Image (cartoon, rainbow, N blue to C red):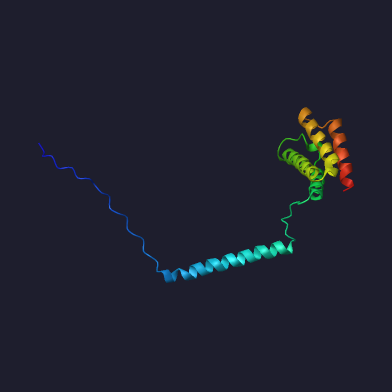
Length: 149
């Protein structure tokens, strides 16, 4: 029989300490980081100033209405029921026209007729899952409003 050995808690060895970097060698790294931030920020600022401060997104009701009309230009009714990527793209354009027209109407009530026409067309399409006479009539009305913008 073996003699019992006294219990000893095993302590894992401590991990080796990473080498320390002298403070003097960090200065060039910090300086390079600051110069990079300044140059990058200056480039972004200059780009923003040269482009008029906009990112291309509409910032007013008229921009939203024009965007709705541009999206509506990409809506080919004959492809609204098409399966696959083509039909999906047309549906997204239709939804984009709806969203932008609604945003335009929220910003300026004079765009409510455009928003109503696109909304009626979209709601009818969702109801019957096809492009019927009502959808065509409302899209024609919306496109007529767009020609005046």
